[in-house]
Figure 1 (cartoon, rainbow, N blue to C red):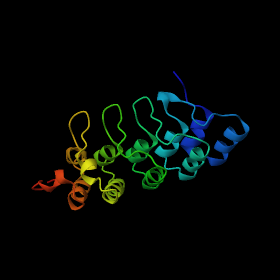
Figure 2 (figure 1 turned 120 degrees about the vertical axis):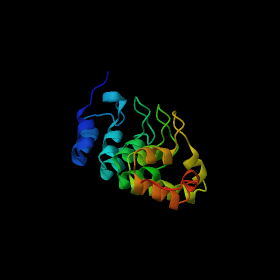
Figure 3 (figure 1 turned 90 degrees about the vertical axis):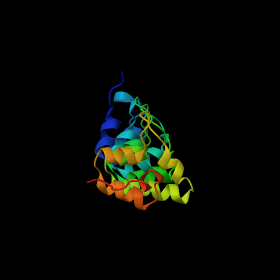
Figure 4 (figure 1 turned 90 degrees about the horizontal axis):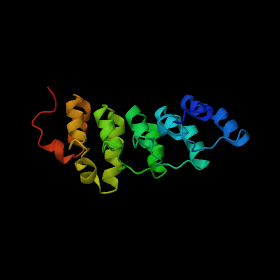
Length: 178
C-alpha cells in the first residue's frame, strides 16, 4: 500500500515552495498515490491551500482523480468546508455530481457536515446550470439526499438554506429542526 511522500506532506501543509522544489527539482510525480490512494491534490484541497491546488493542476494533476474511497479533491474540499478550494475546483471543471464509493456527492458531504457556505455555492452553481433539481434529488447509496443528511445531522442553517434556495425535498418540510 502506498504511503504519503514528501510532496503529499508539503501539499497538506500548504507549502507551495516545497511542492515546486519537489516537482521541478526533485523529480516528484504530481499524481503519485499516497496513503489510501490520495494524491497531493486531495491533500491540498482538504487544507484549502488554493495556491498549491492551482500549481498542482498546472503541472497536470487530474482534477477529478479519485482516492481509494472514490473521493475527489472536490469531495475533500467540501467535507472540510473550504469555500475557496471548492470554488476553484469547480471553476477548473471538477464534476459536481461525482460520487464516492458510498454514492455521496460533494454536495451531500457538505450538507451532512453543516457546511453552509459550500452548500450555498453548490446550489448557486446548479441554479446557474439549470440543474438544481438533479443536484437536490441525487441520492447516496442509503437513498438519502442532501436535505435528509442535513436534517439527520441537525444542521438547521443548512436545512433552512436548502429550503430558501429551492431544494424540492425541503419544500414540504413543515419545520426545519426543532
